[in-house]
Amino acid sequence: KNQIFERDTSRLEYKLVLGDRVRLEQMLLNILSNAVKYTGEGGRIRMALRAVRASADGMTKLTVEISDNGIGMTPDFKERIFNPFERDTLPEVRAEEGTGLGLSIVKHSAAYHKAKINLKSREGEGTEIEVRSLRNGLPEHLTYYSYEAMVGPDILDTVVKAEKEGFDACI
Image 1 (tube, rainbow, N blue to C red):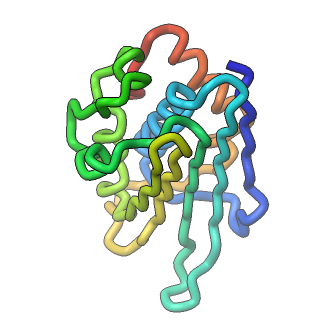
Image 2: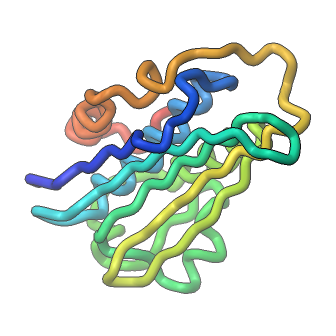
């Protein structure tokens, strides 16, 4: 599709993330998969990561923003987007294979990490999904690993390969 992928890690003040690596990767890959799938030829997809220390509790806060200039979503669909098996009624969406599970997985992975999801989308203009870590009350068994391991330069290649091979959701 000759899409332009921008990856911004300039605001990563810390190099390690605390979390369930598999669930965090599932979350990122499912959001990116939708961006690739529903952004047209020559479109733009942007992923920005921020990790900054919050002054109130001293914990590091992770924010991931993924945006595109794809087909966007209908207002009705935005209300149901995180429900299992939900898909938009736009013809461009119906033309693509899918089960409607990807963003349900995102919702559950975010909840597991005590993260909040903000969604902005306008039909015909694109979508922005922001996942912000709240970091209070995380499960004790989580481990630290590097951001680069999670969102290395080849992350988009992984998404594009999965799309070509017909996978809908990264589970």
